[in-house]
Image (tube, rainbow, N blue to C red; front, top):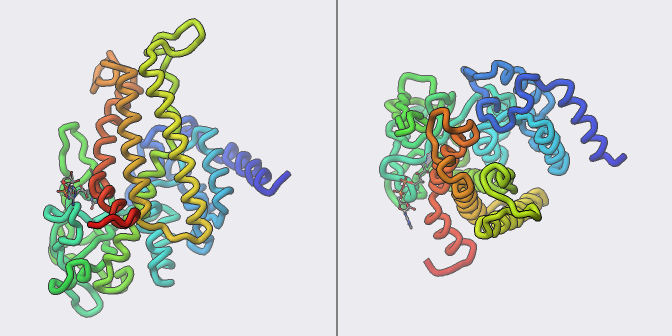
Length: 393
Ligand SMILES: Cc1cc2nc3c(=O)[nH]c(=O)nc-3n(C[C@H](O)[C@H](O)[C@H](O)COP(=O)(O)OP(=O)(O)OC[C@H]3O[C@@H](n4cnc5c(N)ncnc54)[C@H](O)[C@@H]3O)c2cc1C
């Protein structure tokens, strides 16, 4: 048996022996994925045990170094772990901006002390993070941000406002961009800093959407404080760190789309079939086949890039291609699902719709926001033309 096969068999046995019954078969239920934090408030209390068990094995951050609570696994082993979790329809051990954004950024730019302080709290799911980039007057033009951080001894005093802060109402800490210099080039006066949300100077107001949900917030800072030791990178050098984090975010968003390679088999339920078993509607049949081929090719391209990164290539502006194509693919996928389900894909509530159909309506609407978060599709196209293709600005 190869090492990888041994790893697969041991991992499978461990998962089968340890996964809580309540979470089996719940892989697609977002509430079954532990998000961690000081006050996690789970729908399934077993999420807390699952997080602890997975964290103790290093399986919450499988490829991170073991000294920070990671699993120290190779990419191949990590993908075996993921396959086994999928096979058993189990949720991952942890999700969140700690793992996908600030953690990888700390691994690249953090000092030893910052890594020791923050990374084990991320892998152990002790702290839940949110992202403070956008402001009312700084979205696509992020470098225009104005939230000010003024030095006071070994602390910074922060005043300003962030907006669209996803999950800020549940977060323990925020990684944020602040203005520390107003003269000169605007990119050169930005500092990237970690701030504890549990203080009087931070106020979070959830933004109520028409759906009744509040996935993001306005976040106000009034004389909030953060230690100078929580600056990542150089003071006034935060733009470099901010861009690196965006590449992780964009790769993550693109990667999520790449993981969804095939559509659920809805043919029998919603569409007629020919005698030979093929779908009766030739146009939808063609669109489904095209969609699946594009998704598969995209998945392989994302995989190729991930392998190159593993071999030492630094993630760069090409993450914009993954973000752009992945989110466009996601919108196409949801639109296609809607075409297949017709009016059954447009239900919001009520007995006339199955749970899957109600989830589909929300996923279709959510896919639009997917093309905006992490930088809009238009902004990604600008980056691709300028920094990947080298076209004149
Ligand atoms: C679901 C979701 C979650 C989010 N979560 C967070 C979060 O956690 N933290 C956070 O900080 N932010 C978050 N955001 C905010 C997101 O980063 C911004 O919405 C995004 O960067 C766009 O900024 P804006 O909304 O100010 O739009 P604007 O920048 O005002 O853009 C408006 C329109 O103009 C277009 N446009 C702007 N500039 C150009 C240009 N140069 N060339 C071509 N077209 C252009 C844009 O593409 C867009 O269509 C989230 C957004 C969404 C939708």
